[in-house]
Image (cartoon, rainbow, N blue to C red; front, side, top):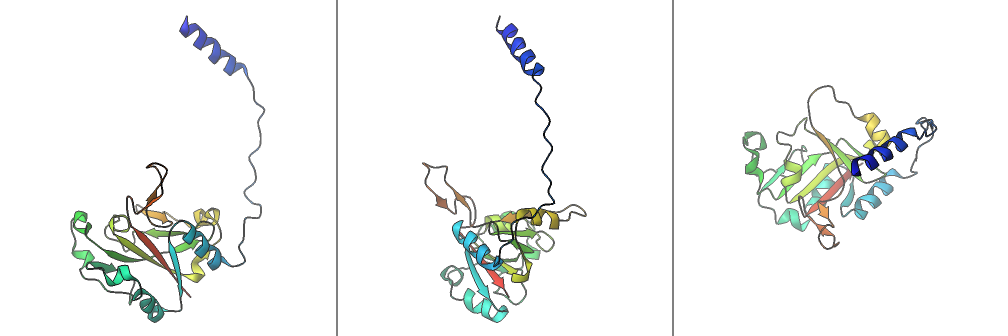
Length: 198
């Protein structure tokens, strides 16, 4: 009896004809922010990150030196030339499990998205793709000229010419699953600083 009812219901659903609706055009005007850097910084702060605008490597290093988590870090790695210091050779690490005690990592970001404060990074110069997720504190360096308005524009910019890895990162790790209480650094970096370089 139950299966007959099921068959009747499915048959009734199949008889219903919903008129087709054309998909909207994607060629229309998208959001454009008058000040991408300000929008990016506001959204990054909203999701728990911090945006620091700098005018070159020297100022970036000065701002980095003011971060307590950088000064307290014992094991650090920087993949941005002239920025910070590396206390070990990432290229010499064979097993990514050896990165579990990295306190601070500085990585280049290819571009940032003003709409949501996200930064795109890929593994072109990143030997172990686990690094941005296992490190205690993460800093990304993005050129201000590489900010775009929306995720729609971001997807248009992505190119996958072969095997590889890439990810959008927006803010530090966080979850609100536990008793609906926001926890920062639950599954990954406890802080994210984006240095926006002019």
